[in-house]
Length: 314
Image 1: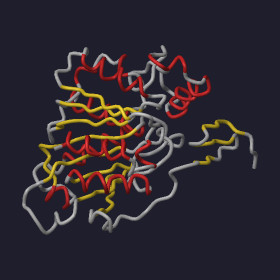
Image 2 (image 1 turned 90 degrees about the horizontal axis):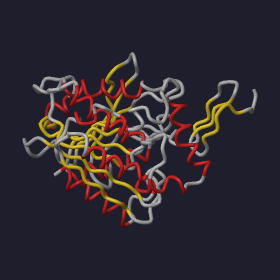
Image 3 (image 1 turned 90 degrees about the vertical axis):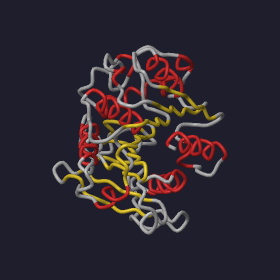
């Protein structure tokens, strides 16, 4: 076994020249359960076996016993640079439990294939397949009882963080351009979205060179066939279809000390100029780093952000 590295994206992932892959985070998983803190129930479903796509579903406490009234549905896409993490990891399981509990929504947290074994666009295709699966429950006779009983497909939201926010944006775009009519997408929440571009903007010129190189290098690693940092999948400002975003409102959450912060603000600006006729707002957490809310869910800024997302969905 050779310890020579082909790619070193520490602290995310390392790939050795002999083909071994060492994921440095997001590899542990926890089972679906009734969460003792929030009473939120979860269970896992298989959406497709070839390719392998699954999801973890969540419903808030007492939904099963109480009202006949249906709940808004959140479709969530986890982050991790398209190459680490999972819908079943403790990080995302805990986050979805608190979000579902606070917002009183049902949720589908999508487990998509990861690079480099399954490079992009696999994650996009898997996420779209998951949305088509959600859509199949429109008449209340889809394959999954929880969605048939509890999900109001006229009130659907997408969200994700980092690479997952990138996915959430592109799924919203595809809903708009392909006119997916099986549900109504009300809004999208992008948390610290993983976007970039060839030309540095805002504070990006002052970033450490190693960081400025790593952001697009990780993208190329996840998507070897990409055209580069101005690929519309990575730089929405270069996307002629941007105005077709298929929802009425967007919330972009950014963090002051995140290298990707200026891209979140830039996204809101280009979206406003794209011909899209919705409303976009940006919320910035002071003094915080990239996806701070996942590692420190109870800090003031994380609680504030959660409340902001909850009120956006309600």
